[in-house]
Structure formats: C-alpha cells, structure tokens
Length: 219
Image (cartoon, rainbow, N blue to C red; front, side, top):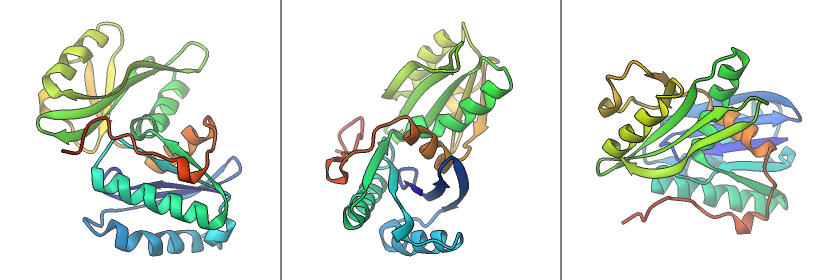
C-alpha cells in the first residue's frame, strides 16, 4: 500500500493506493496547524479503508517547491514515519504531481494542450513548470520547475502558446497571465493521485536521504 502525502500547498493532501488501485483521497485546509493535525489526519484517513500505518509499504511525498513550512512538515513526517516502519520513501516534485492527472485527462481526450502548474511564490514570483504529452504518451518537459517573476513567465508562456494552447492549473489564476485566448485556467485536480502517478515512475530511496527542493532560498 502506498501513502501519498502533500503539505507543500498549504493544505493537508492525503491519498492511498493498493497496487494499481487508487483507494481515495483527503484534503483539508488546516492553516498553520499542519504539524499538529497531520499524524491524526493520516490515522483517520487510513482507518476509513480499514488500514493502519502498519499496512503502508511506501510513502510518496511532495518535496517542493511550495510553501517552506509545509514542505518541512511534510518531509519530516514522511521521513519519520517511513523510518519507524522500516520502509522506503519516494520524493515527488510538487509541480509534477499537480500536472500529472490533468495531463492524463488531456491525453485521454486527444488534446495537445500543454499543462502549466503554478504556485504563488511571493515577491511577484511564481513557481511554475510546463509539460505536454508526447506522441507516444510520454511526458515532455517544456519548462523545467522554476521560480520566475510573473512577467517573465508570461513572456515564456506566450512563446510556448505559439505552438500549443496552455492549460494553467493551481489554486488561483495569476491575473497577470490573463488576457491571452490561448491560455485558460483549470482549478487544481487531485494532487494525491498525481503524487502516486509520479511515484510509480520513480525509484524509492532511504527516507533519511529525502531532501527538499525549494527552488530558491527561504530568505
């Protein structure tokens, strides 16, 4: 059983899969109480499927970018729980997880749209990336995970939009990116399912070796 965990987006996002079957997910906005509520949230979530943490064989967790405190909370809990259970962990880039389910839905519908996940980074910047499904179903990276000024991102996306329509996803549409007929916003789909999707293509590692990827200094 795989437990998916994300705190990088200022929420607690949990998911679970048993083999290839996605069991379900849970999401809650708990403000600054992530570290306090996370352990009981995981226990309650697993109990809904008749499971406990002892049934978990792998923990997949977002490693950033995102909100600094949330990333630390999520990684610390994931590493601690995996270590205590003697199991491995799989860190997943937050932007990859955000894009995964939407890429799958677009590919199933035959769309060639590029997917652009965005996370507010403060100081007039965004964490962003851009992906498209290739001709053989593979994920192609058009813009690697970056911390960029919003104006600079718009310029980059307008160049990409010359080839593909862009679907921007996140928890809010950056107003500075509005106005282009080739860009549209789609509210964030399941992060937990995206984490599990991405983890399947990555090699699990020792939880003690999991590191955050902030993309910029927290200062």
